[in-house]
Image 1 (tube, helix red, strand yellow):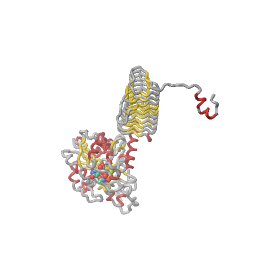
Image 2 (tube, protein in one colour):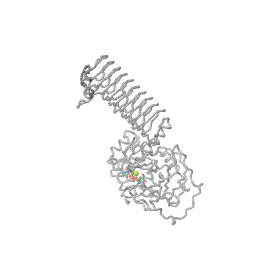
Image 3 (cartoon, helix red, strand yellow):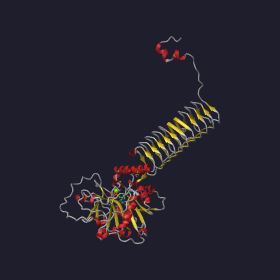
Image 4 (tube, protein in one colour):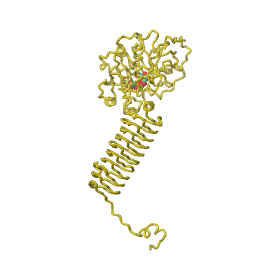
Amino acid sequence: MKKKSRRSRPSRRAKPARAAAPVVPAVPRTAAPAPPPARPGATNAFHNAIPNSPYPLRPVGPLPDDRPRPRANNHHKRETLALILAAGLGKRMQSRWSKLLHSVAGRPVVRHVVEATRGAGVARTVVVVGNQAEEVRRAVGDHDKRIAFAFQKEQLGTGHAVLSAERMLAGHDGDVLILNGDLPALRPETITAFVDYHREHAAPLSLLTTVLADPRGYGRVIRNYGGDVSRIIEDADATADERATQEVNCGIYCVDIRSLFRPLRQATRDNAQGEIYLTDLIEILRKEGRKVAAYRHGEAHEVLGVNDRRELADAGRALYRRKADALMRSGVTLMDPATTYIDMPVTIGRDSVIEPGVMILGDSHLGEDVRVGLGSRIADTTIGDGTEILAYCVLGSSKVGRGCKIGPFSHMRPDSVMDEEAHIGNFVEMKKTRLGRGSKANHLAYLGDAEIGRDANIGAGTITCNYDGVAKHRTVIEDEVFIGSDTQLVAPVRVRRGAFVGAGTTVTKDVPAHALAISRVRQENKDGWARKHGPLAKRDGHNNK
Ligand code: UD1
Ligand code: MG
């Protein structure tokens, strides 16, 4: 893997002298091809000039002699297969774990790339694994029949990773969409636009590029004076002049399989990192006189690889913003999208309102008209229509029915269930507990390993004593039971239907249906005691009469 460190590189020197560069006549606009049709959300900066570039540029696209060839009848029928490179470790993450396993907006980095290919309708995907192969395989989701895995035994570079998949790709006749595995923000629409671009431009290889104000660390796209891509030079191998180039390679390529493996085998490890670079394929094809088309993408944040934690956070921000936009478009109110973190897999119904500072994570699904209060955190939880969650609640791996009220300051720990119209209030903690329909625990309670029926009332300060120091035990509270305040239920114990437990009771035995259980010491009143012995008596030196 890489030895380089993107941010620690000394800042590049001033722009190289341009004086020596021959003046290249601008290509007349009419010769430039029309940009591909706009797709929703896919901007492409086809006609962007690269600011400060020492390399003269013209609109990206095929050369005049590289016009789209007439489409063969079956041109569009040729299958595109995706090849995702996910065998690296990612040293710049400074992690025990492959960077592709790190989670961002609710999915491992590599999973986002797989989902993007799926969203773009790519029929088959091959993922190259190597480092922590089993974990990466699981992160990808190894049960999907459309996904296959290739194994790269030693991590000798991106070119080597592609070569490791040669056998898996045998028999494929069409284009191979090669994607670095570290592109979590890549959108399906961009993949589709890029694949269409490739099909229209007839070059054996197309690559996706973008322009960065600070291109350090990335492979630079070197163009000849005509503006065609001639090669990609890695940051570690680049001269100061080359480093000044701001157009970078994004690690997204579409290659006709016939122009992939044979030329790539010519790549050597003769470079600063001693690796077989996939990017060498461009120069190899160009030297064979083949064309390379470049699709310049305008939204850099979407196509930048995540190599370190800062870039992981950047990708997270982009994904959360995208999710927020999609939810708002679908009819969900986010009071402050900038402080709202909703993972990609989450779904939320219409007219729900999310207050500021909320996180809704993982496999969470909220119905319609749900309100989530300020500062709440909901993970892997399903919430029914019309439920209201007040401020500062924490809910994990639980299920909440319709029309429930929760909070403020409630905590639902894993495997808790609230049936419809149940309420829990401030400082109520549930764990592995079911609270039946219409039941209430409005203040200060711990309900663990409990089964609570319908229309029960759980008084303030109720505690299920579920743990005896060795094992956990269950408490059962049947329908319409009233538990008075400050009750302890020493499990295992059952309070049967309609029973009433007096405040302050320690319930150690089952309570029969409709009975009253009360275990307090009987109250005694001693007349005049306070006047004689109470603090006032002492302070005032009363004569105790
Ligand atoms: C690569 C490109 C660079 C481009 C950048 C875009 C090369 C040589 N360089 O650099 O031009 O600007 O991406 O983000 O391709 N991988 C393997 N096996 C390996 C090495 C890497 O599977 O032996 C995988 C990694 O897991 C990762 C991807 O390939 O998903 C890219 O590797 P990375 O180390 O991130 O390449 P960059 O240095 O970012
Ligand atoms: Mg990278």
